[in-house]
Image (cartoon, rainbow, N blue to C red; front, side):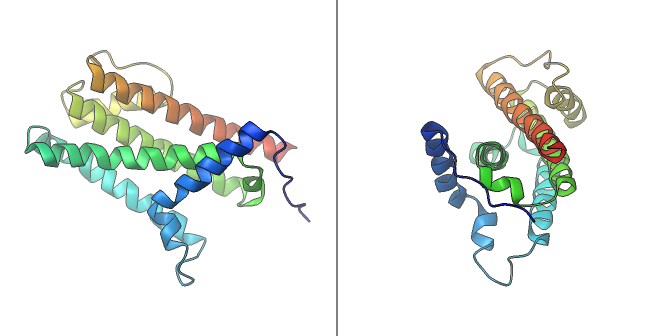
Length: 189
């Protein structure tokens, strides 16, 4: 029998967790969970698979929209930014809020860490393609994989937007990797 999570004693961490909890209502998955018929363990899987499909479609069509109408370009760069915010918010909450230690199984958490790393790679590839740091979607995905796995930085990431995308990707990937390690450490204890 699991014991309930203890209240976080550190007031700064408690404040950060409160802020993160306030931001969770900016995420559609949280809205869907309000409806009793949609509140299901499978919702998270559908949500992530849906995002993977959207991000893959944006990257696959990036050759067509990179030089397109400016509002379309901005929208197709901001949609992945929104998902990056969602992923980063969830894992920051996961790492700092003690209540998450008893939410789901270790195996499920690791599946989501992997899926979210794939999403992060797709987002990085979209941003690299949009900033002109990669010539093709394939090369952008390869550079993004190296970026997410902390192996290398893209060689052509010049300019403010490319560097901002690289920094956000590195922060999110590092948070995800820490989340995976935290899941494994929690299992050992």
